Image 1 (cartoon, rainbow, N blue to C red):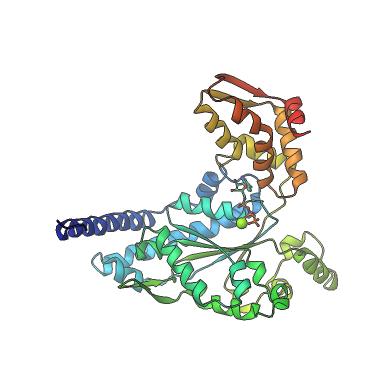
Image 2 (cartoon, rainbow, N blue to C red):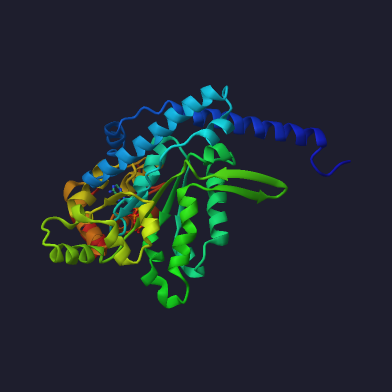
Length: 367
Ligand SMILES: Nc1ncnc2c1ncn2[C@@H]1O[C@H](COP(=O)(O)OP(=O)(O)OP(=O)(O)O)[C@@H](O)[C@H]1O
Ligand SMILES: [Mg+2]
């Protein structure tokens, strides 16, 4: 008896996997070719998830809708010219890229916007924390990791991966000044990213396989808190006699003063500034966002036959407490969790029906 997988079974599995990848590939390509959401359509969809940040969402949705429309149209032509060969079409397609930089305080929806956009467009998404670069001070292995993550998020299909979104979180942590004291070069890290962000041809060696993966169509979004960037802009505005909201005056120079390399900044030409969420925004998130923590808890409890309701003044109280935590919408999760912890333990199996949380109840639970 053979204790491994028989040769025939192995071949069948391999064939199935190849088929799956091909199906997934044609579905993904088709989706991009047919992409016809206008920026306003995309924003209307986004509004169901991301609350507030009106101006920022407009800029984001415009950039993303244009990117995928442009790529879709170019691919369509490329496919026609290459009799439907995706590899050749992707290779021959040239599209100017406008990567996006989002600046804003913690928990205000930067990553969430990127993730939601990828879901709405139907492309893969990877989230990379840039602090890992600031720790080692060079790009090398981490760059390969990013490409592998991208490939994984695309179910192992390199063509699907090539059309995805890569989100660089905490990009401000690789600013030269931030990591200078660590005796590693922020400049080196930033320079190391230039090729990838621009669009590079890469070969990944995975097991016996060599996989080509280009980043020329990948949309890069970089997000960071950039603490005190506002004062850099405001000081410059004073020097130049400019008046108004600093967000409207943000320039590449200001990001360079912060410690970003000019070449890297130049590769993120679309710049978006997100605001700190207000108490009202936080409340709206609980009421309206399809991605809200409260909705998740409500669904969880519904699975036990418990119909959770928060009164309006209870929501205001939760929003107020969350704002005090200073972690943006993340604060909502921790506050709601603290309010419900006891009930989540006690109620399932003992209670069904409507369970109302009011203002007093919240105060009682939170002290
Ligand atoms: N504007 C918003 N509308 C709806 N939900 C939001 C919003 N902002 C944040 N959230 C919720 O909070 C969570 C955390 O937000 P997100 O990951 O986008 O923070 P961030 O801005 O990237 O912060 P950080 O700088 O810490 O990475 C999201 O997963 C989402 O559930
Ligand atoms: Mg984030």
